[in-house]
Length: 68
Picture 1 (cartoon, rainbow, N blue to C red):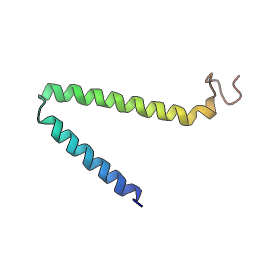
Picture 2 (cartoon, helix red, strand yellow):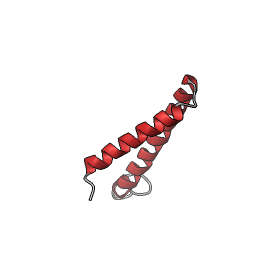
Picture 3 (cartoon, rainbow, N blue to C red):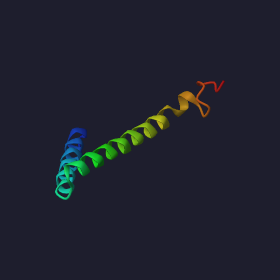
Picture 4 (cartoon, rainbow, N blue to C red):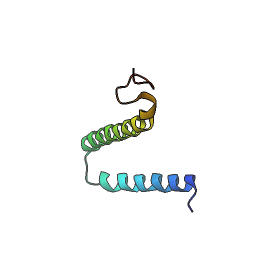
């Protein structure tokens, strides 16, 4: 079984290798645009995950636990 920090380390290394690989084919401007795009994608994924975790607290209409 893999400990959490080992998994995190492998993710960081994989992300670094991926970034180095794709950067070879991109200009500085293209890297900047792609980096900004991927930041937005990551932010949206985090927001969607957070909203799923928070859903029981806020209910479907967003007005609190009691829904009113």
